[in-house]
Image (cartoon, rainbow, N blue to C red; front, side):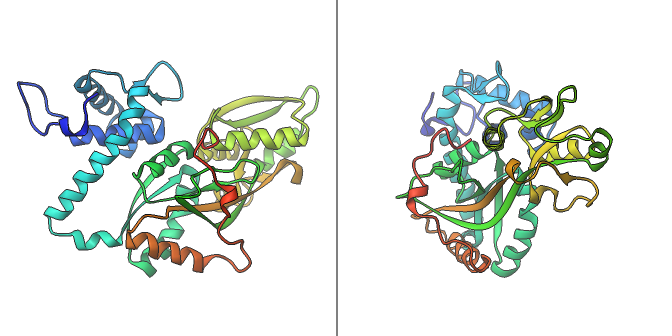
Length: 336
């Protein structure tokens, strides 16, 4: 694989130039782990998006995406290039801003990483407050916890906000990364009330009446939380998986449509009609969640410092202070 200095901006010896949008496409699929969502994020058709990824791979002469498995993953070469691509793109965009004479606006700009559930359920309200009080602009990077964690540690984003459960902590480098709890949530199973009345389902299930389960894809952070909850509660005696997805919004909508039981953060159901979903199973089938913000202690962007200070001021009275370093460690397979 070529080093960053070898990336060419125009045709050399008849070879097609590497295009910046190829890097943007590659990072989009790396973040989402899904070609369809990445194409939508890039506002293009999936066919055109796939062609551009293939052109990027042809330019390097190696496969960057492993298409033999689902969900989509990067090859070792792709993982190696991911950090380089983020750095190249960031440098190019910063250079463009400087050349356009708008570097004075950069102190108001912040790159924030969020999982899908928080991006859809919480970020719009957060941003209404942050942009009004702090006059910020933002680039939002959305993905699963593992991917946004890798991007955050590589410098592709400047702040990461994600769910955190004490039983399944997000591990980051304590000497480098500062973490703070900014809100709380609750993770519990929900079901359409009409389905509940009609079928009389109850956890852990009954013989001859298997529970229809709407579950998270293997490896997703919420999937591990569900596994921990079920194991602690003694297991599900009779159930069958109806649908698997890595997005809580999809499982929520499937539950609303009456297809089964889905474990969801309360925030993802806060804005649906009250008669659309009801909790099922009681406290032993649920788990409290924290919403944590993380920043690099060495980051000197004034926007990051201002937002961090605002988050501290905005925490409800009595919420715990910044997490001690004992809760943090090196990024590992726990982040996912």
